[in-house]
Length: 418
Ligand SMILES: Cc1cc2nc3c(=O)[nH]c(=O)nc-3n(C[C@H](O)[C@H](O)[C@H](O)COP(=O)(O)OP(=O)(O)OC[C@H]3O[C@@H](n4cnc5c(N)ncnc54)[C@H](O)[C@@H]3O)c2cc1C
Image (cartoon, rainbow, N blue to C red; front, side, top):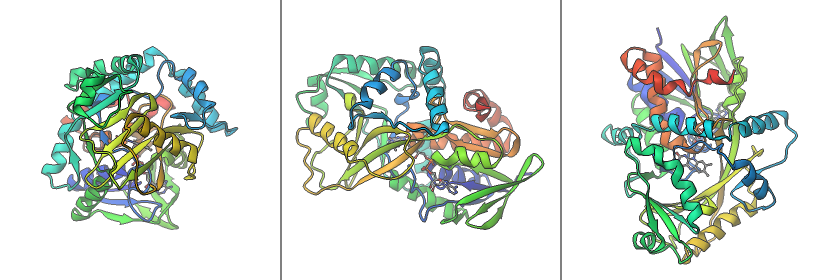
């Protein structure tokens, strides 16, 4: 019988899970190393809710791009040379997944996982989770036709869940978003995609959790997971022992290390991203806009324009590499000629929890019946937070809904790594 759950990680995944389990009637405690919820990747992202982007990061051709881009300090993808054996093993495993078969499998699995994403975000609003959500669609802008076609190929399988990417000429793109400049030659319009203010989503989920009686223990880094036989009994958080019937590891890019404490390490490594907010709103946009070749996300929020991008492997710290930030700003000026913030924006970083096959790890940790994992969501953690919570809830409750979700969840079982 499961009465209490301890969730490690107050990011969007941990909070969505806490909210769902508390709604199910469990007594939930959320433990986080940081002083505030969301301080990891969950407030440092573009806030896109994008089932249309149901594609894993490891893709055919990624190796060639990575090698070319390694020579450019402001490139969108960078693999930092590091002798760390975990990093080397991870990169080699990821390269093995850069083939058409695994990519296709990943697109299909993520598409199924995203089937109810937008309805689950609607449900949040109906259940009084207060956050800023925009249903204005997404526009992908490309400076070349090849860029658009390459991208479009990965969106075709997602049509089966009702998310479409309609090809546009450069002029049609500018009709929808006049701020985009003459270099834009083609685009894709994804009418059903949405975006949120990620800070408001974290705060909204946290507030609902508090209303439901969830206890929060901030400034409490988990340093040990204690077990008796095949079950975990407690965690050591900030030097204090916290007991529970069930433990959920949702510590973002740190989840692999925590899983090791529970006896089963998982290959989850950080994929560092950068961003900044233009509070002067120097460019007005209606849609969220993807600057295709530069791989930069631009998100118009009620009080600021957010820019985010780059994927850096091999860096786990929060240092800001000015070249990467300049790369994002340069891309913005290339695509959006009016982009000229009148105040110097402050850059931030976030670490995406990455797995070698580009798919999240959701479900029981092998060898420990009462430890579940909810991590590895890579570039889609905001998008996939509600369905991840749903799968965890169904796993805990069992019954019909669990059986319904079992086929979808199978591809994400952490045991695939062991
Ligand atoms: C630049 C960028 C843009 C992105 N854009 C999007 C987007 O548009 N749409 C989208 O869907 N996704 C996007 N993502 C991805 C998304 O942000 C992540 O997938 C998601 O935030 C991961 O959430 P999380 O809860 O797993 O991890 P995190 O938010 O990182 O939370 C993990 C938490 O665990 C805590 N923790 C870690 N170790 C311990 C420990 N030992 N003890 C206690 N607590 C611990 C941390 O303090 C942290 O609060 C983007 C990411 C980046 C970096």
